Length: 343
Ligand code: SAM
Image 1: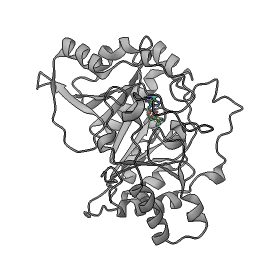
Image 2: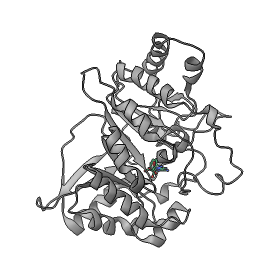
Image 3: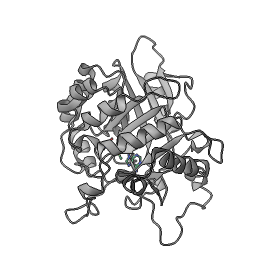
Image 4: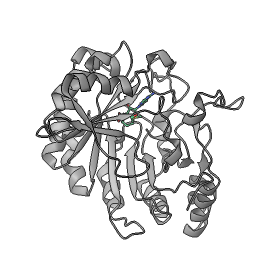
């Protein structure tokens, strides 16, 4: 199934909660997401059974990879139950679905083993600094870095390999942590990925001068350690990858350059929001309601047809249009927030 720009649907990101225990300023700034903020009521959230039913329909449409995200997905109680249901899915090629999770790592030490046992395939941990003071300032919840590092260790012990670690780089805030992060994870079976700070949502006050282009990150690391470019393995891959020039050293470096090198051309991702809306782009303003169909008694065939119709009409390519000035949402609309749509 191809969209209007001939892109297939392969990757589904599911936000299982809009809540998070961190308040990273680039994602859920404290001033906006405070005690008064109205998060979704429990009854609005898709149940695990509803998520699993929709996910199976996406897989029948060609999805081969599912990422659980949020918000902070490990805040959703008994997430391993959902993992177990999704782990049973088979792709159209009759292979297990590539089932993965993105987490801030705060609860990973407690939950890594149960997630592995339930059938989770891979884990990505977000970590923006090694320095405790910098990390606490970035998560703005006074959360210590050592607990996330313990979470990563626990995930390794549980058998997740390789683990991905994602660092969002903001100029003047944590760019001095690029080399220490690489030094820390070098030699381990960890893919450390540097993400350009993006203009997602409408609350983070994004400015281009706070973006550190990936090319700069790579130049810094190349000068320090020596890097060699790795080939692309799958189309639609968001990261460009490098290994250490010293081939005896384990570890990988990746860069995700949604700002300086838009990768809309082969974007094969759809996103299912916490309350069951289908979004076709991280920068979208509007989603397509699937929960209404689910709860209104629609059959699998009807929901599947609705998903097909939405995908075939898709022509989103926000990042490519960003520099052309054509990306402002229509008046009265706001870009949806990342914690709701799923990062
Ligand atoms: N709570 C989980 C976590 O921290 O990984 C999952 C959700 S979070 C929205 C997913 C990823 O999006 C994290 O790696 C986070 O750093 C990244 N992210 C959020 N806002 C971003 C922004 N403005 N630019 C770049 N990455 C961002």
